[in-house]
Image 1 (tube, rainbow, N blue to C red):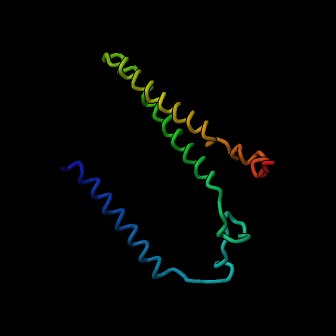
Image 2 (cartoon, one colour; image 1 turned 90 degrees about the horizontal axis):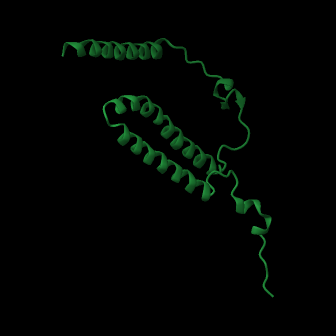
Length: 138
């Protein structure tokens, strides 16, 4: 219990410090409002156009695919570091095959996404102008 007392003390001190700063800043802080302060900007640039535009959901899908595979690949590094100690303890073959199955599932997921066109920025059917033309049967 004594080793957690220091952690608790730091936590309490941090909370008191943050709360005291917020209270003091709200009491003593100047509240100056101007037209320039109220303007909306993004990255230092004035906003142009309407904020309620439709975004292509491909942005989100590509980001999700990147995030999933990025996190999964990052998990390979600790496994590779621990593999030597697992080999020494006699569990190296089991760990190798477990990671092989893990990587195989990743490769299958990537292949599925590739086949479904998830890695294409513009779907192939949209690239073909004849996709939009209706042919009449005579």
